[in-house]
Image (cartoon, rainbow, N blue to C red; front, top):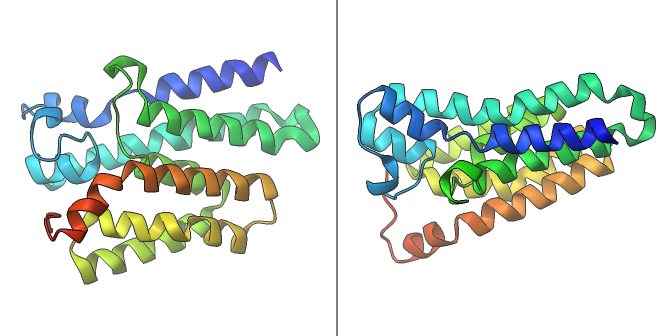
Length: 198
């Protein structure tokens, strides 16, 4: 139990690392929190600083989810039947850290890339299919948030199709709901025709 709690705390702290802000500073760009949408996610950093910055932010945010979960899968084998629950809690903590980062007064990103990192480790085939859906949706709509929302809606479906784990399915449902809540302002702008396109 102590190991699980330690991994949850570690995952939250890792999830709290502001990848977008660090990338912007490293490349000498403006603080994403005060430009564009004001978000630290891939889309805003991409709009402000270009493809390289966007790609680095995406990789950083995805790694924040993937690395703690991979570590948990390796170290929680002694939990037996409870391993999946422990790993899922670690994944949830990483995403929570991204959305509510300790280092930025609990004002963070919108959970998409970090959730992808978590799912990529837990259910790789689900993650791969969601990438295909995201790219297709982005090609059709040219709107980052719409593509993210479509993937969020499909996340529990994809996990359910490629995994028998009820724990992972429950986690997928929770993360899907979190992503939808985080994108409520994007939805409002979309229905007003004000959501920026690629």
